[in-house]
Image 1: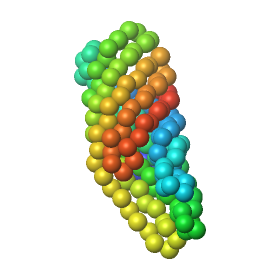
Image 2: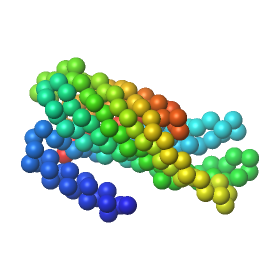
Image 3: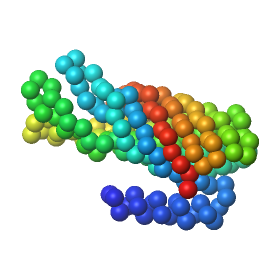
Image 4: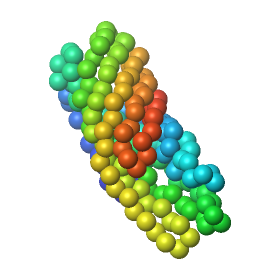
Length: 168
């Protein structure tokens, strides 16, 4: 899995130098429920992870964004059963509309689809969950830096996700 992600990242980076309408970046992300860490009421807590993002500019006003977020594994206990959350991945594709598109500053809105998949180990029982969902949000780009926030309507997590990153 790590080798595949590395190969994809290298391929996207090489292609970004060949095509000026494409850019690739990476960053850190936080999700309000991505940690899937339960308290006694089984409410999910904030989780942190890594993000890969690509943007293909269709015109000065429209772009297609795509990416993947990997949330770091967590451990928690519910009713004296240790649970380990692992392999929490979210893949997304977004349509982006630039509300402001100046040289070094861009503001955009976005809407799109995502797919969330994760595995958890509850004691000796392993469970996997996969679900398609939707998302809506926006972001700002300052030169090569970007900040993005979106609401993830996926029924597995249904959360707010914030990402800070850098385009290569």
